[in-house]
Image (tube, rainbow, N blue to C red):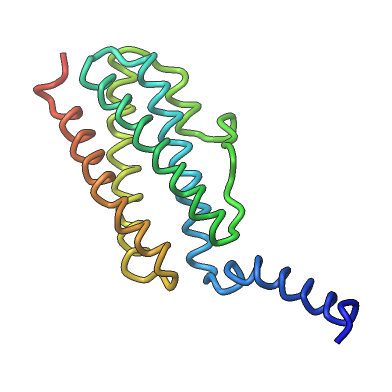
Length: 170
């Protein structure tokens, strides 16, 4: 068979072969990846804010952990999104995020208290989302990613709760 007759078929095969993976990814799995990316970027941003604005050393240490862990998680998520063909957000609009705006107006002890409460609520929500995805994801790579992130989010929740204990406040 002449090559010119095979070329259109090979082009179609190449196009469908590249995009075929994301076509098989469920809507729920795609939505999870997109939401997880936003969550990682928001948590890293709030952690950076806390490194600058927090009054207490334990809150600053927790913030540094958030920045490092959520940045690492976003890198892993980016690789997974590339493999699955899902377009994840590359940035957040901090001007439209109410929590970030609220935190930006605070500093010192007031910042610490609000940041702790945000982190407890945010990590409870994130844990629920990741546990749900680890249990229900259709894609094995997405499922494994969600499951592997749960211990990190649990650690963050425990750190946030420890920071929020009244004995820690000065």
